[in-house]
Image (cartoon, rainbow, N blue to C red; front, side):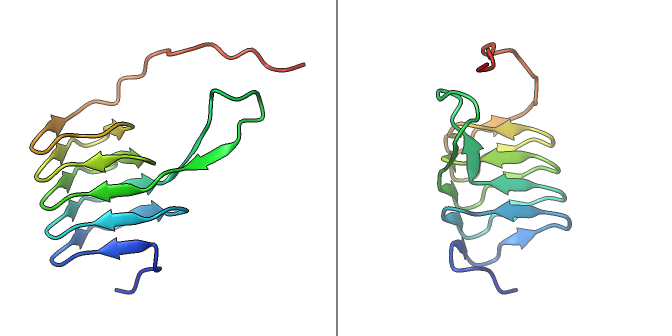
Length: 118
């Protein structure tokens, strides 16, 4: 399979069906990475510290050797997932995951309130 130059794929990488890789920045999938069905890897996000309309920002994503991404999880820009880490199905990864960690859940929580600019 051929990938754009900003998507770097190592050896023995398995990518399931219905996956999306949105890559404004570099996405690196190291050797032996496993990506299950329907995973979204997206380097772009919004800068919520700025006023509406929020500017787009992008950050590189690195998925280290032997990591496994469960079905329909979402990996956001600027994240590194460590060697042999496991991301559970449906999890949303917005910060780094240490080697060997198992990350689960997509629990939503309010982190701030937005006041629209009039």
